[in-house]
Image (cartoon, rainbow, N blue to C red):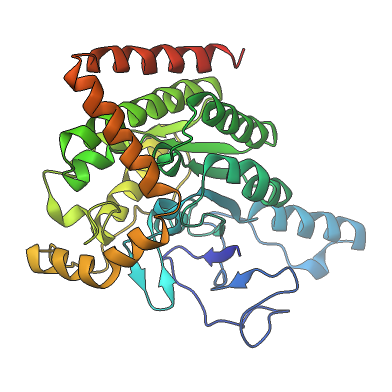
Length: 346
């Protein structure tokens, strides 16, 4: 289910169900959940205001139509997986995350933003083109975020060619629809989780391939690209949530501010940068163990049917390659496959 937030200049919202046409639960006929609405907008500084009664009927209608168009909110749609869904940044009733934080800053205060988050935990690149993209295209966003691929690298059937095709199709469709697309490269999960070398190296190899594709496609489709992989995740534990795989509230705000800085440097009209609304303590060893005992084991169990066999297979292949001194050859094969995947896109 999609999530819709209509943010004002301060990121504030009004209670669920307060929008015209919303039900008591906040649901609309389209099935979206309304979490908030644009608050009344002030008249832009220096604007000339003419009383409607002072104009002839036709001219008055044209002036009112132009005024409504001038303050039409920026429509922002986010596609992706758990990172964009907001996992690691809990708020009452669910997750918030970097995309929601950025949404409140994507336009000047007098304009406002309509935000729809289509991202869902566990999504693969194929889920973008089959499930999320059709909805996003119907919404006709002015800004669209596409951050996905981490789950692809964790599956036994990882195919960099297929991932490249799905991402290219998504970025192309959104760009052709007039959206400014936001993309990001992802940090290496093996480094974040401190995995043993036989597993960390093949995961790093796959993530390097994914990021190479994302870099190439970002240039092709003129996306605004943030190097999330280069942010100081391992140097500052407070930036990571207790699972060490997703950003914390502070980490999500760091991503949001990174995109805000890039858009500001490009001359986009924006609101103030996302501000910190809370400071959570860095997770310690006890919190890490508690997460593994209460949620980590269930997380592994839920994914054991497709994720665990694939990871064990990676370990076996990598261990055999190490015994034969062929790990560099594995890297070369992935690099060739990545170059071939990019070249095949035309």
